[in-house]
Length: 252
Ligand code: ADP
Ligand code: MG
Ligand code: MG
Image (cartoon, rainbow, N blue to C red; front, side, top):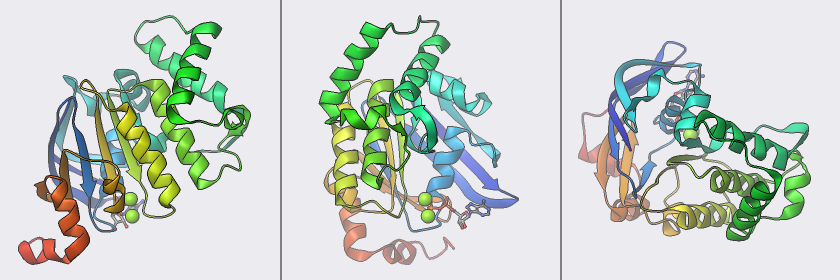
């Protein structure tokens, strides 16, 4: 699905990622954990193609293509979904029209006709039921006045509608209350299948009580310093990130 090799990247001349290696295969759920400032959001941003980030070394292959050569909208067309691509508030643009545009952009990229009203409604109803999505949210302006939990629900609904090959969820360190955790976890658990993959980036072990990852990786100073199964997340919860540092005295 995705092969990240020796990825180095930074922003505004500051080096943040110092050689990331990561392989994700179809059907897998990976979690990246790490202390604040370790580069988790930078990794997610680089994979999404955010322009302010500069890749200085390494490669990323996504479904056989050079991901780093693709524009953000091409990445979406190829089947990459990045949760934080969409949390902007756009007054006057209904949430449902936004999602319809996103779905049809991806179809257009693949050379498919836009969904007609009936087919779109069918897909929407199916995913709304799956995600317990509140219909009134969809007719409101995109994210405008949405609570944290509603934004999260909307984001996960977008993911369900777009049916990406690889979804990257950057769960920022703030505002992930228990409701939001459940929304994200339910979404991930319901959408995972043998032909897609999910990368969850999180500071919190707690999220992984609800999502069962196949692999957990610890990011520290821009490097993956430890990988393991879900037990690694429990170990981190128990011992804190300091134990990683103690195990790897040279990582600073
Ligand atoms: P995490 O998501 O793991 O908390 P980030 O990827 O957000 O970490 O940040 C990694 C490091 O990069 C931090 O030291 C942060 O201060 C720095 N950083 C992030 N954005 C910028 C920026 N725009 N300019 C300079 N440094 C930045
Ligand atoms: Mg942070
Ligand atoms: Mg972050």
